[in-house]
Length: 403
Image 1: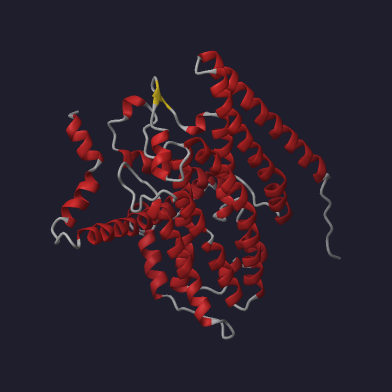
Image 2: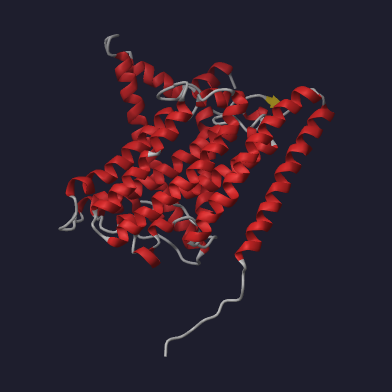
């Protein structure tokens, strides 16, 4: 394929943005380009959300030996449109004693905060709305607003189930935010930058046909695994979906929500899942980079969305496979396993850097460095797992029936 054609295909959305903005006076061109970027985010990711709901319901249906949506449209793929119409036309019920203003603002704050996180997410080469030096810091800072919105929803509803769900959600998100941040720090340490585009470019090289993705190093693999687990807890996905445990709390913090406001919470949960998956791809999986050197002719944005699709499938698979944790298991796992392993991984990443300078860049030095760092992490994993299992004191269940 012609190199010029490959470049044009890779930058097709950037070229279209510049051409549309070029139709306006020079003074307004930056503003128009920014508006087009915002519209692209608002159009693309909610569209992926709509497809994800069908994919998840049909995928879980297959896992549970049922069909899933199959009535609206061909093979049920117009089900999201029916759900949207139902949400828009359904009655909006607000409890009489609720704080109406806070009750209304909670889902709006959640969705706005999550959309702001997409502003610094690079979805392809030269395809990022705000290319700022502290992009990763911005994402984690703005993501903390989600905890505030969930607390607003639970507190304003004047419902004990909602308040309990909100408190469980806030405790869970604060607990897992610490290992989430620490797992991301290793990629920032090795790159020396908080800019997502710089982190992706640092992983853009190849050795033979294999890429230099951070996940292929011991500290990168451990960081990626910790990031995925913490991301599941941050987005309330199974098996960490305790804030909306229907068997205990009806529906958690959005028990008193209906109609379009409930749909906003539903949208925010899936957009948050895709957002945090996108940053996991950026930090550890090379972002828009190709998995093999001979596939670089495929557009960068296609690789990013392909990886995002696989991440979504992974989340769906986990939801259909793993049972929900108990609250004590959730908190113990965060503070007694995730946090120590995340802190140790920071030391392993630093050791990787200094061992590389000490042993040199030869094949023998690389093997020794790899084995030493992997051995430390594997030993820590085994010891922490043994300690936690020993303290659980697992015993046979006993059942008692009412007379």
